[in-house]
Image (cartoon, rainbow, N blue to C red; front, top):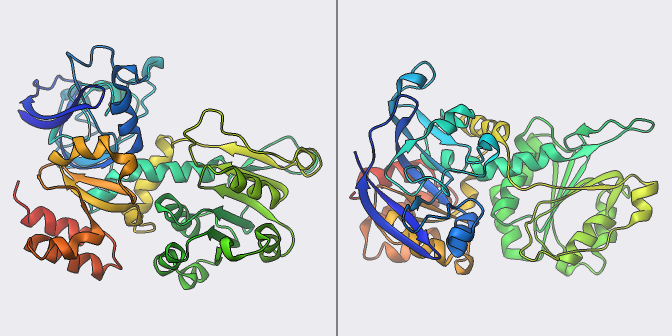
Length: 419
């Protein structure tokens, strides 16, 4: 079967090409990819080429398919896996295989599997490691977001607390406690708020900060105080830019006790130090944001580490269990990571998007692999729609859903866009 894919040949050498896939073996699966979400990790792979730890040294002669946040349908199942998987099922993939100690991963290391493709051959390593995950939801784009959502899920599970006289760590945020999400109204911050409100282990009070009124207002319209109240959570949005003493104000909001859990969503030194300053006794600080500088550092109050048992954790990505939880919650409609998506595009848009990703504003860029159209911001649908009726209708549909991409918009695109 022929496939069309965005393949990496070397440093910023990404080519969209059509080529023949080999017939599947008994321990492989043929699949159709529908959506793929572009990640900053794709940019890093393209920027480094063969120098990237997951990209093969011979990528110049044996190119790999880029993309690791994808969703699609199973087309054909090899004999070994027919007891477990069937044609027509939707799927997502946990790319961090950890197969026999290697760093090989779909989207970085394989010639016939990656998200930026129309069809792929799923190798045995994925199934051997139980990383081919069934998805029961309607919208393919949500299945493609399971991997980034799992990063948020993993963050909450990585938090921990202790008890006086015990050395045992009790995993998860403090149920019914004070939780703060600092710089928390970016795309991943919104996802973190959504999860906090709808997961099983909820805080009693959630304070979300930022320094941009427009972003805070939008967050409050998407994840409302009223919805939080229904879930038993007091939700407060706070612009710390207009506060003379943010630490004092945050402590006041907490009831004077400080915060049991604090998640830092931006790699900014004063923000990390602010987070440390508002921790309650046995408070846990999770540094979610990934810094670009290898020497990034901040001051930590070691008096509180010793006498107040404050502590710090960091998470980078989620595991397979986190992905399963994300898929399950999305399938049940408990969370909707539509807030992550700010752009859509066709397969031909992949090279330019990946190479220039840091300079493209907004959140996730969702690729619909069987179509070809330029990367387009959701905010620009109305303008583009003046000359392209498809986008005029998509603009109507996203406005119907509070400005967010939706299953309805996806279905319309797939039914009306030319392949």
